[in-house]
Length: 122
Image (cartoon, rainbow, N blue to C red; front, top):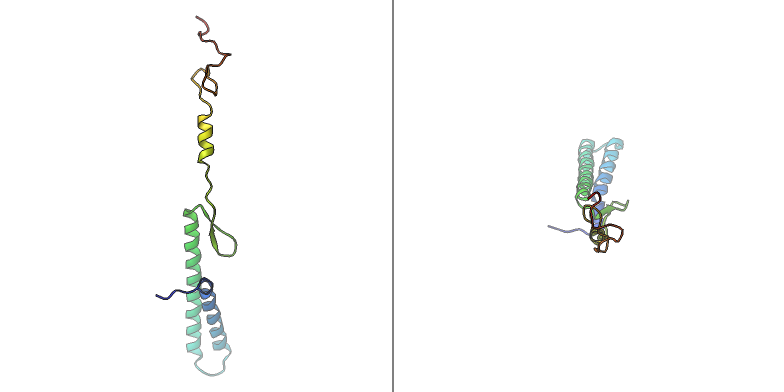
């Protein structure tokens, strides 16, 4: 299979659309010649360009839904975002404060000086 450079690959649907529109215009305005053949080829080229463009758009949109590190920069080019790590933030907050049911242990893990060791009411 032949590989195309990316700019050429991205231009193929628009090329098909342009050729199809041109063939339809020639078929419509040409006085003589094979206008039926030109009309048919123009219609097929237009449909092929639209199908190719829509399939690429749908594929890229579905891939962007599943990959949260990809975004569309507005030019139709999808780029990968740098990975951000928030796991260190959540692990610090979960281990920074430890408390018992009655709240008698402070964030450092030592008994709180304001809480008495005896239960009230005894």
